[in-house]
Image (cartoon, rainbow, N blue to C red; front, top):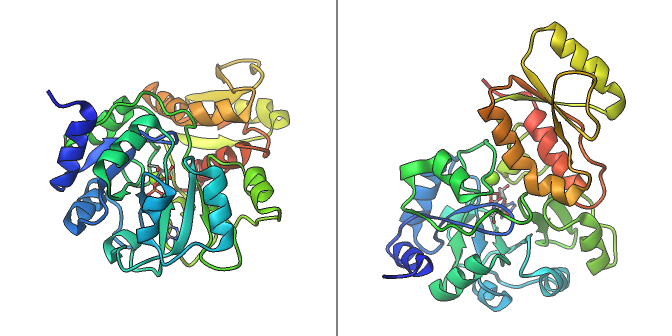
Length: 316
Ligand code: TXA
Ligand code: MG
């Protein structure tokens, strides 16, 4: 009997699509060198072809063939933070196809830290193009069960690596020019990036690059999401009550009345449980989640980014 990793490798070599665990969220992986397999990933996700994917590799060495070179900032970040929840946008080499990069001159690279993802990549020996393993625009999966319920029979295999430790996507840092910037806050705090580079690094959430995570509405559950400060909580809850909405409050302190989930006391825990909570809120049939976000430091920046997008007006 082949092990689950061996089975995943065999399927990926044949051009299959396999859901894989990473420390951030589950990815929907295909051989990044196989254009047909990559196109299947887009089809399963319902993602527009022009939106580029992240190429996952086993090591910094394995990353080299996908790029014409790392800037000194990129090299510093890779040395300090790979393997880990960090994606570097660097100039692409000819090896990176238009199917993966959306026709751009850059490629996004990541070395995941999850032990099963690492084992898989070591055996596979190539790059795996993998977006989060959910339908386009929805909540990312942090367990194998989430993947099965989102994508079911559309994937060839789900490699179960348990619940994701970080719980939100990688931090994407654009190192393709001198002007280094964070394109998506994520599992590595901004403070850490700035400490490694010994300079301040802006968060640039508007870009001419087509990045799904940069769309206003993204990471959205079915329920509406409303954000508020702790001080406004009671009045907002009363308004929702008055409208007859079925709502639940996610906050550090219990509201005077109504359904409540205690918000995690620190940002790391908030990140780890965020997507599972949003899914649970949908399962329980609420119309609205009224959420008090964590403070902005550490992973709080990324949690607030995801919550803001979950709360953004949606295209019907
Ligand atoms: O943690 C993660 O990053 C997860 C796990 C599976 O690794 N992956 C993930 O993939 O979040 P996805 O496809 O959901 O988000 C990838 C983001 C998108 O916003 C995409 O547009 C951006 O990376 N991206 C990819 N290539 C890029 C490039 N060349 N320049 C700028 N952004 C890029
Ligand atoms: Mg995604």
